Length: 154
Image (cartoon, rainbow, N blue to C red):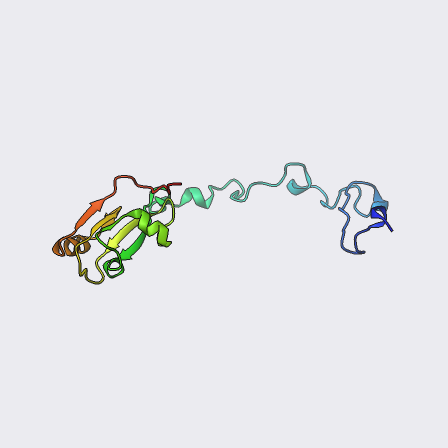
């Protein structure tokens, strides 16, 4: 036995239908397209939105409210104040990346759920108003990072 004897399992490979090869082949003459009409001719099928010459529905309906600004939408990874108590003095974006909270290229927002027991300097892309007030009330600082995207240092 060698590689030249290998064959696919019977029934696993189906032959392509060959049209226009005479009556004996089963689909000769009109090649399964029937007689006359638009669909029987080459290039005869119109596009999906074609309505027989009538103005199509996508042109009849007004286009209000369908715009979505998804390409420029800012998605933030959210961290609450109660999660910041395990840090000492300064919390940078690299701390969040090393702990797996933040991935490279994501943005961080700090929310005000919980309380701070110690003064912290927190770096983030955005803060809620209440979170900023609580950080400053505890004697810390809320620093906005100018860069929108974070790059992991190698």
